[in-house]
Image (cartoon, rainbow, N blue to C red; front, side, top):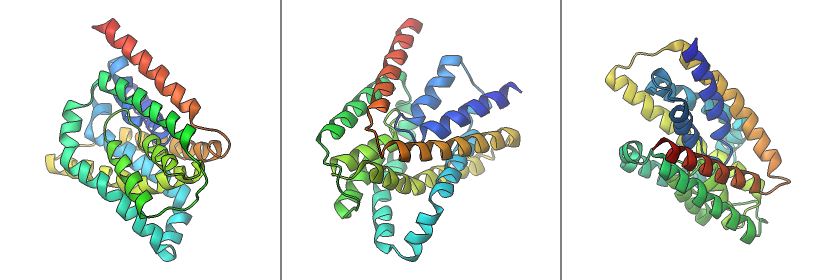
Amino acid sequence: MEEIFKAFILGVIQGITEFLPISSTAHLIIVPWIFGWKGTVNSLSFDIAVHVGTLISLFYCFWKDWIDIFLKDKKMLFYIILGTIPAGLAGITFHDFIENELRNPLIIVFTLIFVGILMLIAEKVSKKKRESINISDALFIGTAQAIALIPGVSRSGITITAGLFKGLERAYAARFSFLLSTPAVAGAGIIDLYKAIKIGYSYDYTLFIVGVVSASITGILAIKFLLHFLKKYPLNLFIYYRWILAFAILLLYFLRN
């Protein structure tokens, strides 16, 4: 029962933080670190579960967009494929290094603060007028998504920020960010599944189901909230949250060492 509770909590955290610009990786590293959680919730099977959950969220919210993209909007399909390439190459090249060397609280503190600063600058300088993208936008935002492999950056945070720097309207930048993240999230899940098959990993199906359901439901709510929020308000709320979280992590880190 305790493991199910942990799976539920981490699934909720994944669903919310995967789509809000506050870094899901940071929260999934920090929460178990704070409470000393180990075991199945830190396993490969649970990683697959939350990736499946967030992928369900994306398809639920954007299935009409994807049908339109595949049937009519071939230009947008090209931009998404183009924007996915940098993250794919970075993931293949640096995945093991990032997993083994960069999952450190102090690195997360730095990225939370630094990307927050970038978000604030983008809000100040962006014209926020365009609701269309071009090849340059796709490559720029796609490269930003590759940087999101570093814990604490936030995929949605850095890609929305990149969109703002390119002059995109805020909610449109968020929508493109979510469409662009779909292949990346699917790819991450496939990689984890391949590893699980390769090592013959045994699954705890109860935890898998809890992780999928909790991540998918909260992910849907997070996507709808953010798209609505960004039509009216800037990113400042999330910027301040990132900085407060960074300060709390730093304080706890020095208290423990």
